[in-house]
Length: 459
Ligand SMILES: [Zn+2]
Image (cartoon, rainbow, N blue to C red; front, side, top):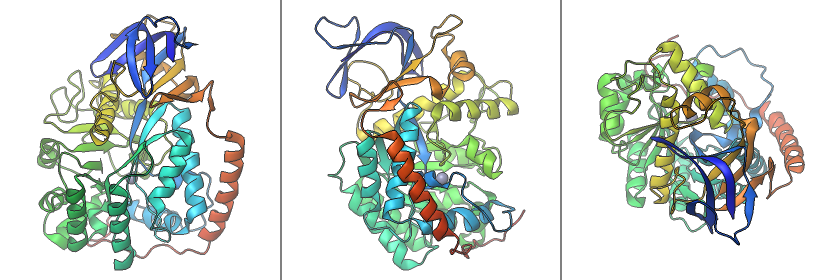
């Protein structure tokens, strides 16, 4: 197949743009230039061809929570949001609702031009085999994924052990060709030393990184200091979690030294701008908005110091990285006018780099010969000149997920003319809504979670 006649964004960091055909053979990009005769052509004139976006942190299990009824007292802080919403929802999940969550959330991501998701999953009443259910659902859609089960002690030692076993089993691989694993762990404040050690050991044995929430709220730091005598980053570092394969979500409440430690390790930090705003947890110091030479990566020198990466995730607020990257930009811009429109593009490139690391595909996220053919075609008639110098402005101020026309993952056209080529979207939505209704009914009988961290509940 050849995507012909579009304006092609060859990469996002550095930004490169060309007018070219993209020739795809099997699961890879074979050539970028003029398509040879005889290759089936797909007309992409008047379109923008982009590398597929990567969501570096999400929770597909929350996909059926949209509009969910809520009858408890309004949560007043982040811990109460967990106790009263997410730690009830996860206990309501069973196999059919999880499958529909993954299908609905995965389709949302693809329709927005996202070709890879890093998912962080919890379903304490359906642990064994849960990652296979997600992998199979995403495989049905044709979405690339990196999955894990979030190990935690909040639901008791039996479920902590089952979570570790589920990760260890899934990390052995051999299932869906487009799915890989990381070792999942919830967050320092719900993990005992022994469980954290077991997570780090399981990850090391599998050669995988740990995907964990880090200092999303100040409560995580308070718990680490009160219960373990040091901050979250030092605790996780000592446990062997902070490695160059680690995926660390949030990192909102970290100081300058802790940021240095994380980025020097080569770990990937997933920044989730909309989620941080939605939960009122604070403004992450890795989220742009700093002076040009700061770790925050504001201004023109957008990259983090050290080998670590700063990528973007949605933390479960859909799978749309166009909107997420725009929100991250505006939030950073509000903090500092030095934030460049190219900053969110570099963050998306970092997410693709993290996915490439897991898949052993260093060219993932680039449209270049030999790279996996993961790309998105947007119907975008640029009203101003389009070039490497201007694409960031178009991205931040002009793109929208509604422009996504086609999506190719591993060489296969999985979205064509805004429709899935794999599943019946209307039937899927109807089935998801039915499952959501059943899950919401179960939720009514599940009380707030009683787990609380050490160190008190400020705010
Ligand atoms: Zn999260």
